[in-house]
Image (tube, rainbow, N blue to C red; front, side, top):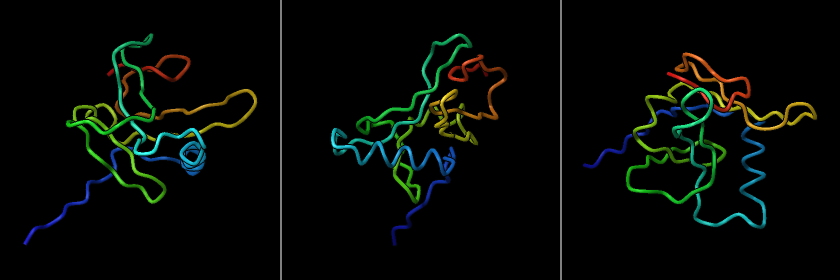
Length: 116
């Protein structure tokens, strides 16, 4: 008997982030077969920058299912992102995705890069 395991979600999306991501996925220019990628890369003023983009699944990626949409994340990035909350701000003064990361020892003023 083969047992399936359900991976706990490493990141959470607020309702506003879920709505914005669903809007992007339903856009006419969305590339079918792409997944939302959540990750990190080196750079930014604090050392690491968040990645939030649409991409194809790669060999080292894990696939996670939320009730709203699936997303992918490189297995090695979980240590940096576990417990993070992604939020969408749609206001005139602050517009875009924001990241609340409990693993970050410091963040930059713009909120898109962090140090661990």
